[in-house]
Structures are given as structure tokens and as C-alpha cells.
Amino acid sequence: MEEKELQKKVITYKILEARLDSLLKQRDAIIKEIMELRSTIESIEAMEKADKLIFSLGSNAYATGKILEKEKIIVEIGAGIALEKNRKEGEKFLKKRIDELNSALKNIEEESVRISQNINLLSSEIQELTKKAG
Image (tube, rainbow, N blue to C red):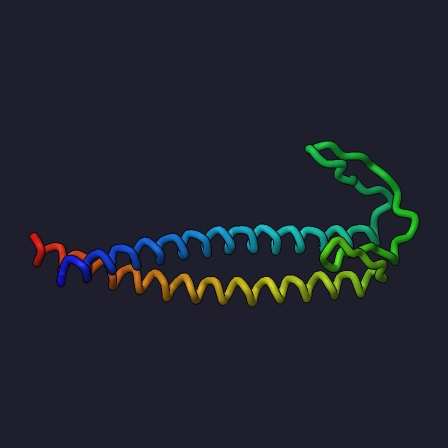
């Protein structure tokens, strides 16, 4: 009976470990996206004051250029759809996205804490069952 219980707890432990690993990867991706959004907002704010800006062409290549329309930006809203917005609306949209991501980040962190606590509890139970079986 104790052996089946031990096996069950070990399987649960491994499942929780995998879930925690997945959550940590999601957390890292969200943090990266938040940093990217903040950088974008800073660029939008700098755009108003600058005569020339540096534009990324991808693969660490850049070009300088002038912005002809400083009050309009194009914001991707999801599913490959982009809308033209005035600068303030665009900033507001990006800040709202940061708030949504921060909320998701908070949920991930709370779930990570719960899972970590369960992992620690299971670890102790597994050790006890192993001592009894040994």
C-alpha cells in the first residue's frame, strides 16, 4: 500500500515540477514583453522631440530616418491586425497592455508559490514514505 502511495506522490511531484517550469518560462516571456512595451513607449515619447530616429531593420541592423507624421502611430492589436492611432491613444493602448501583462504576471507568481509549497510538502512526504519502505 505504501509503495503505491509513494509512486502516486512521485508522479504528482513530477507533474508539479513540470507545471512550475512551464510557469517560469511564461513569466520570463511576460517580463520580456513588458520591457519591450516600456521601451516602445519611451520611443514614442522620444519621437515627439527628435528630428531623426534610429529604426531597427532586424538582425541588429539599423537605419536613421525622419518621421513625417509624429502624431500618428500604427499599433498591432492582435491576430496580425494593426490600427492607426494618434500618439496618445497608442501610448494608452500600450500602457493598458502592460497592466494586463502585470496582472497575468501576478497570477503566475501566485500559482508558482502555491505549486512550490505543494512540491515542498510532497518532497517531505516522499522522504517519509521512502524511510518507511527502506
